[in-house]
Amino acid sequence: MKKLLFESIQTGRIGHAYLFCGPDGIGRKTMARCFAEALTCETDSVLPCERCEACVLNRNNTNPDVLWIRQQEGKATVGVEEIRSVQEEISTAPQFGKYKILLFEHAEKMTVQAQNALLKTLEEPPSYIVMILISSNNALLLDTVKSRAVRVDFKRNTDEEVFKAFQHKYGTTAVDKHILCEYADGIIGRALSMADPAQYEKICDKILQCVRDLPDGGGRALCSFENLFAEYAGQKEIFFFTLYSLFRDIGLSARYGESISLQNVQAVDRIQNLGGKIGYHNAMECVGQIGRTWRLLGQNVNYKLAADALAIRIQEVIHD
Image 1 (cartoon, helix red, strand yellow):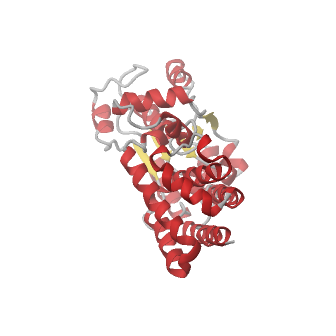
Image 2: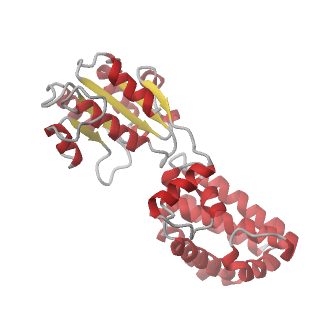
């Protein structure tokens, strides 16, 4: 993929718009930044020279020819106002190299009105403009927008590639490879977010404490569980993976006892104890509910509403 993009620079066949598709953490933003740096370099080299004024500014994230378009702080979407401000920038030529780059960090968060406002620029862009739309959910983009951009799909990595990338960055094998790779699901960026094994174990410990109290704890236990979801709203990927992993282990322990190898070996005793209380079918029902909620969150539903509903449902299942 990187080779193809940089070959387009070498041949001079630069598209006016690209759509970088794939899940968060897969490397779309990193690749977009690298591509933008190469395009704005003042030399004729395919790779950035790292010495010209444009490259120095890129290194400091201050190049006026590289513009990031994001939703304003406190807003969930990118509106027409942001697109109009972009269109003003488009009217001025680049200050250094041949191109001015517009990077839409979460293109799927553009409102329909914003996407329609962008269409004119996509249809008739100035020769020096290159737009890179970075999206984790193409279903939210208009067909008219998608059809005017060169689509670049970012594929998941193998487990071996994920683990090697983790070791290369952190130089450690302290984290369990199986847990790391299952959590990463082929996404290196997600694996790197699990750099501290102690953090994973801390989340495990908090979840197990809450789950232990849920069957008989009533409203107070439920409130504690809901508060735990809120505490990790900013780290929902690792929190939901841990929750899913623990309930699966609880279910397997309930069915197979000590004969089964569990994923969370650091908490075997507590998992086995909960397995005896919750039972296989209830635990696996919770696994299903967690998975469904996670898929809903991928569709940009309200996190608090979805998390609170899941906490209530888990308590109901366990109590039964």
